[in-house]
Length: 187
Length: 228
Image (cartoon, rainbow over all chains, first blue to last red; front, side, top):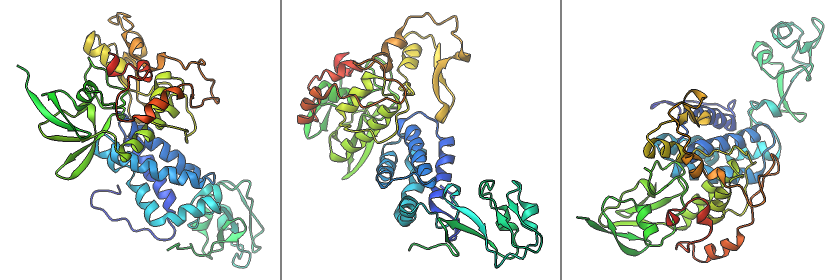
């Protein structure tokens, strides 16, 4: 699914649910639409995975996703449809706890799924250099120079520009007031 | 002269005409394989995938659609294993969630054992079975309607979106469309779709003999090959 004979290395900064969603999006574009399992099955899988990344997922949906993925893999007409559920099946097989954290605790351990994370600034690390204020395209960061800055969560679009701009590692990803310093490796 | 081959379907060794499909043979011998896009006098495209069977070959089984699988000497076909029933149920569930306003599709879902629909209903009506397109192309040679678009945007439509002159308005496309039979209670409003339970009296017969064709009334709705 990730290219011909290619290897993609991902660290703990990649959310496996988001990876599955990305591949399903791609496969939905590639599907010709002739047979039911590929056209409707991929669409429904994408619907379920999107629900999970946006914090609306349930554990029943997770079982449904697995059942649906197995059905599509067996019954699709062509090779594309038969391999289409592989990203879902293999992420479910090796990273099932990550799906469960998304569903049960509404948290994204990698800090990728935008709907269930918020950004905040560590006042101890921030020295008020103002790089993030200039970088933020939504005007969501306020603060005096040399004072610790604050993110306005209503304006913040969670684009992550401030995080990549900050040279002092002061921007944190927060899930329900709990700081995720390092991504939790579930295995 | 007709040539015959011997095929093993669900343990019964039956004699089939060479060149016919497994689905046609099974229906002829009273073995029920649910199907939607198959119409006896049209070519098969295996789009609905409801007629899946297990084809056992050298101890390995492969799941394929039976309408495009031709009979061969010594073939072993399983039409009603647990695995097949489960997959068929999942596929029927996908279909009924897409087009709950069709009695034909509701009936197929009941026949395939769908008890509840776990997806949000969409009410999209067309399930792209391709019956209208094939009857227009193959029987009337008109090619007035065809498939437009790809993937999610695929739909059956007139050429360039307007009715061409060579469409004779014969109405065959409407006759074969599974959407033209509305549920017994009438069409469902958007947001109020449900799995129609009207045909559960039929389900009792279908449950007892899942593999054999009981000439169920469910088949009439979608023009089951038996009623053609």
